[in-house]
Amino acid sequence: MQELFQLKARLAFSELKDIINLSLPIIISQVGYVLMGFSDNLIVGKLGAVALAAAGVSNSVFFLIVVIGIGGLSILAPLVSKASEEEDHEKAGSYVKAGLGVATLYSILIVLLLGIAVYHFDFFGQPANVTFYSKEYLGILIFSVPPMMMFIALKQFTDGLSNTKIGMYVSIAGLIVNIILCFVLVYGYAGIKAMGLNGAAIATTLARLFMLIAMYVYVFTSKNFINERKFFFKKWFEIRKETFELFRRGFPNGLQMLAESCAFSLAAVMVGWITTAQLAAHQIVLSWAALSYMVSTGISIAVSIRVGAGLGAKDKSRILYASYVGLILVILYEAGTFATFVIGKEFLTQLFTIDPEVMAVAPTLMILMGLFQIPDGVQAILLGALRGLLDVNIPTYLVLFSYIAVCLPVAYLLGFTFGFQSAGIWFGLVIGLCLSSVLLAIRFHYYTRKIDFKT
View 1 (cartoon, one colour):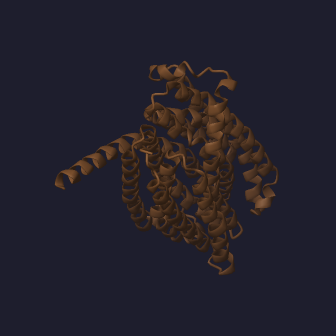
View 2 (view 1 turned 180 degrees about the horizontal axis):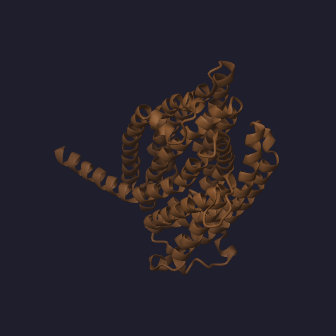
View 3 (view 1 turned 135 degrees about the vertical axis):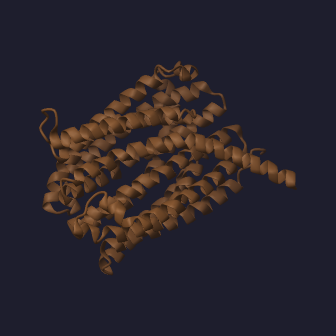
């Protein structure tokens, strides 16, 4: 009995090391990517509450639509991992071109939807001055969509082959480029005229283009992909199977992320119906939430890769160890973030602004945001594990139900019908995340019980 326990402990520890080694570069990469928007908000915040609110609602609308592509391409890493475990280099290499093709399709769809959003921005019911600046800001960000989608496709490929450090390096470099350009273009330096809020959007677009070029050069020249690269240039009709599989399995993931993004983005829109100060407070808290969530998603991606490898190896124990170790890791992390946000709520708000109207609201929202840290992390890991198992349809229905059918109506009722305003809207988000994590846990337990590679 003791030997069995020691064996399980060694397997769990080994899996923990693998997940940490995989997830740390992914986390740094994810955090670096989110810090683009985070640093933009810090810089733009000095322009005033209107500029901060405009950037906030514009980014909310932007990511509300862009997540369709981000989620759709997220299935690429576990598919590549599974093919690599099966030593099918042709399929792994074919996924690169398929991924770029699907990224192009998502880019076209997203650009069209964002164009409609800009043209009909009045629909979101924001104050006139916020709407004016938002339309220009979002219109510029549209140009960043194609390089963003292409970069994600290439990064998913390298992550799937457990080469996660290159994405980290490129993301850090992109962040540095973005911060420098943002300062220069927003406030004007070295003879460049200050562009204000629009300068931040241009800086982000140029930084995303830089990241795509850097990743493209690496993937298509590195010796790490010699076995896969000979299949990069297959004819489109030769990879139609991989392209269709990537789109078929990825689109439900896009809907999953869309549901959660929809909840948070429409929450921002609802808060904008109250006051500009409350919208600015919402954006500050959302920036911290997004930054924190990147750690959970980094671990989730690592879990999906490890689970995909276990699926390719037909080893149920590897699947379960990767999933449970990921869950334990994220729960410990999110417990720490909960304490941080509750204890440091005033300080974290003051890093953005000392506006008294914003300061009167943001700390309360920070506490509510802290409450959903653990359920948010749990649902991220469960979605990653199910994605690695290529189980995408049922989890999509569960997520859609949690966020669209429950979260948003409850947020509206608490915020407006019961008069709790932005605090009520955020408590609705807490309820949606808790429900999603419970339903996904039930699905994971049911699905993994049926796995039997011997039959």
